[in-house]
Amino acid sequence: MDISSLQRLVWDNKVLKGYNTTDVPLEFCMLQEKAAAAFTAWRNGNEILGEELADVVLYVASIAEMTGLDLQHAVKVKTDKNAARAD
Image 1 (tube, rainbow, N blue to C red):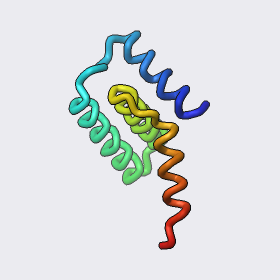
Image 2: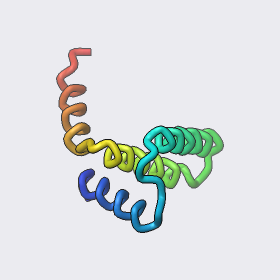
Image 3: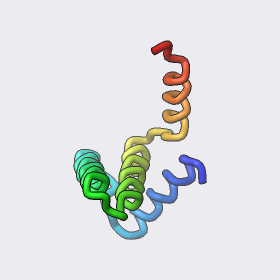
Image 4: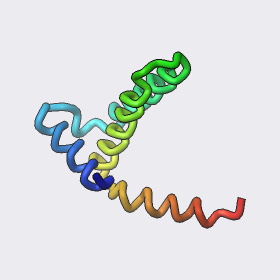
């Protein structure tokens, strides 16, 4: 699955289930909570690390959709920029 398809899938699921689709600050707070949960899972050697990291990706995709950002394009631009760095 490409990032654009994932972004759309995440959004469609949010709309279908009546999850937050308008409160961007709340979505960032939820993202932060999921990132912290992923760190805790890693620190504790917990088997749910993959699930927690997946949640992080889903929240990022959701924020991108909420703000009208083409995340696939942004990731491509950023990876190209990182590859061109001299350091």
